[in-house]
Image (cartoon, rainbow, N blue to C red; front, side):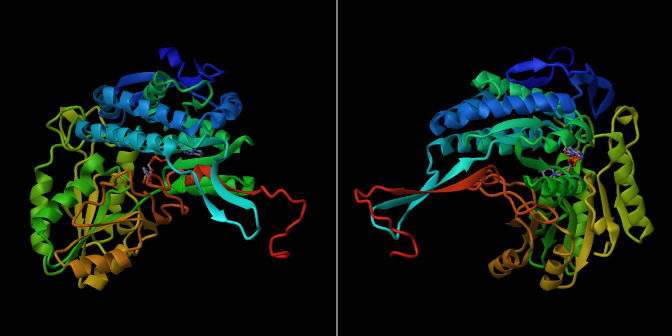
Length: 496
Ligand code: NAD
């Protein structure tokens, strides 16, 4: 797209009104500019929201099975383009290829799942207390959905938000992260191939504090669906409260793995490696805390370090690489500062803690996989979301102590326990305060047919995916129909 014409408004690819653009660069090689994108603001928001409002009338009147069929077609187009799209993801945000394929697969799964919603029940009937009165409740769309998304799952997250919104009859204005605009453009191009009608999906590229902020302000946006950091999400929730606007927020995490005395340590180490260093630690479900029972802490730590030392850091497109770059230079500095402050506070650096050295790394934003030991719950590193290839080992004296440590942050997204005891497994599921709990599995690995989201500062009570995926963008409408042939007024609660 073609000299910054990357806004998709009312079925047309447009530049920003001002002509301003911004580049997208490969985080593994800053000299490689991948494209130039429209830098949008309030003028584009107005056009896109107007287009989405106009399209809403006809889209909500389109039969739900037809809306579902379009989403199913989108799933097949994603499947046909999976490899190309995975390479584009990998280049633009630095996820290794095998994971980039997973990102696309999640969207394909979601399309297949949500496509079928078009023919599923959309409400229920109940008996009336009045004679000859029929009652039913139906789920109805709310209007224009503003989607503000992060860069770390640039295909899966838009799919999680968009497909449920579309199948239930809403229209969409999407604002992807400024770090991954190219993937968003490719996604919307595929929607046009699937036959999305004009105005039903609109795309605005640009920065959060410019176009993102303006989008929330638009009086014709009915619901805001945000995924990103807790800091940004909190600002958005505050603003939406003032504007009286519905808002769904999926935010940060400080996830943990508990390794109990009876755990299969080999399995636990594999789970810890995937959870802590997958996507270079830049998943909302990344395990940045390993809470290990004192009886197995030495043996777990030794095995973990052996596994970490075998990880290859490098360019994300190289199949031999396990850990790609982090998203940008600012993030490398942020990660490094957290690690330094943890060491100053008494943590012991077991490996990593620096940028890798060598020509292969000189043009990109790389950071070594890092493990810190001797971390206690009161330390900053045990509380903040680092969002990089950094994990810490924390010692637990008992099952109860491990649960307390796991629950001792402000976040509640994903917690996992490794144990061979079914009794402890079920007790842990009961006691862990998180939206996702796992037994003998990594903290990452959610499947789209279950609800996804977190408690406390991770979310505001909504869930994406699963049976309730469309809750955030629908309302319930109750209807009463008097089909009696008499002229008698029968009042509920009074005449019966
Ligand atoms: P971010 O908060 O910096 O940005 C997210 C989106 O918000 C981007 O599109 C950005 O442009 C936009 N934005 C920024 N400031 C804004 C403002 N003032 N008004 C409106 N929009 C604004 O987050 P990020 O760095 O892109 O993503 C990483 C974060 O996302 C991590 O905290 C991670 O845990 C979280 N995340 C959460 C989930 C989840 O489901 N819970 C999933 C993935 C990522």
